[in-house]
Length: 116
Figure 1 (cartoon, rainbow, N blue to C red):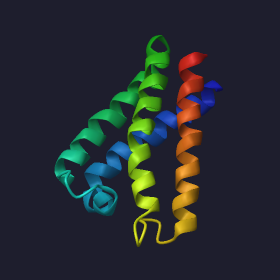
Figure 2: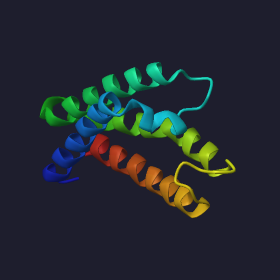
Figure 3: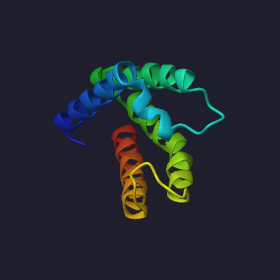
Figure 4: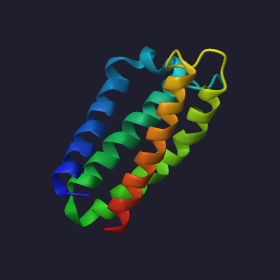
């Protein structure tokens, strides 16, 4: 992945961390009921900001790519679960399928950063 793409990914991760702080209730439909929303948001902020920092530091970029890939794999069951809900977060089954396919693309991007 080109360096500009890595900076864009890091910026997206930083924005995602910020979004969990600014709009925590937005994520409520995406968090499985057994997981407390506050804990899910705290975990997300720390993880997303940490990955962004790792991606921005060339010496730690491979670890950042690996961490990003692992995070996307961890989110995979949530996207699969959402696909089979009566009313997916995306409001349609098609949207849920697209979201799941994008998840696989993100896993691949993390893998590419880790391997390159």
